[in-house]
Length: 174
Ligand code: HEM
Ligand code: HEM
Image (cartoon, rainbow, N blue to C red; front, side):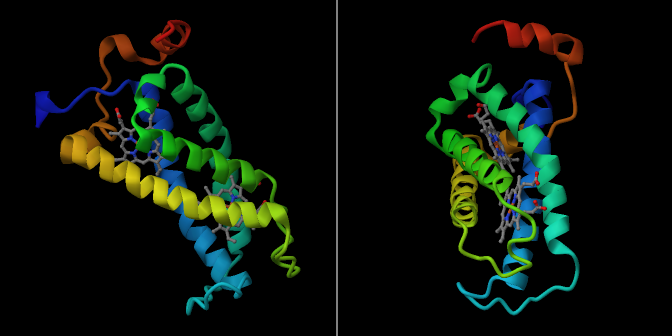
């Protein structure tokens, strides 16, 4: 591999990496919450014991500040990459899932309140982010294969791209 793996800026890898770990965790824990508390749509055979609303709320609470920073990064320094429609879709999906999640109250589902607008928006956002991330991954793999995908998970940081350089990178308009 070595030299042919494209270099991704460390700030992007940090924000994107944390997001790409927490979104699947929120997705899965959300699925369990759905299976445990809302049986209107489809009957999932997996009622998993545990405080899954709290678990999901914890992933969500960790995700939203990082997602906010990532969105700010993507629309400023990373704006050029948003010309790829699948990148923009992933970003919009993330924004919708996180902002509708912030509108949720944790005891709605416990008390059987399944008709709040925010909840419907959150479920819609969940479906949208699913489609958007599948598209995003497909687009990344189609454009650059596994090497391009793996470039986001590289740990190597160039000398002129450490945390000390993030400020200057943010100030420089791209
Ligand atoms: C799980 C949720 C994910 C979200 C919400 C997401 C979102 C995004 C966004 C918004 C960008 C554009 C960043 C910018 O404008 O600077 C991006 C770029 C990228 N992502 Fe993801 N991503 C996710 C998962 C992944 C995964 C799992 C991989 C593969 C390991 C990946 C690989 C990449 C690559 C290679 C780019 C650069 C694309 C380019 O230069 O056009 N992403 N991602
Ligand atoms: C990728 C998918 C999802 C993401 C990114 C996501 C994200 C979030 C976020 C950021 C919060 C706010 C946490 C906070 O700061 O308090 C939240 C709350 C919540 N979400 Fe999700 N969510 C997703 C899917 C789902 C699904 C499928 C359900 C199923 C019903 C669900 C149910 C809830 C509930 C009940 C809350 C309130 C929990 C609390 O405040 O403690 N989420 N979500």
